[in-house]
Length: 113
Length: 119
Image (cartoon, rainbow over the protein chains, first blue to last red):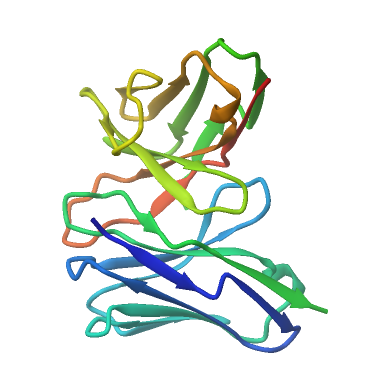
């Protein structure tokens, strides 16, 4: 099945700096790659997603890039703010027909004021 | 965006009892819902796929007789943890998608999670 690896496990940045989180996936049939933000005691919230027919997508301070050849995708957060502090998960959908997501191990982002 | 509501948000139960967790899609229909389990500081692990009107599909290593799933309607799936033990204590999260029809999956919406503590 699909295997998603995520790095780093923790990331500390100063407010205003950029943060980058990287993921790799194993199943070349994956065609959907969402990123989720999870705050303590809550369910994950989608922050951005990308389909395999696109190489990059941006939404204000958040962007995601996808390299299908290398099977990796990255989350970029610019001008970080303390409220960006949370755990971020990448995910991939794996083979068509298996509609559940496989999640990366998560990155705990801490934005220092 | 679409909303998935999960209830209860937390529950404490005694060992040996059963606990039911509900997952509802509030403004869309979902033939398929997903149940995940998350241990502290770990990722979400898929437990099972809940299919409306048919049996759930369980992931390897998940006991179907212990984690009973019922998907009785297009907007409701329930997870019942039977004969709960302290090791079942965890954060359980459900997810649902609007019925996909195209090449790419639609966005998956997650419930707020249920913190189960078995004492």
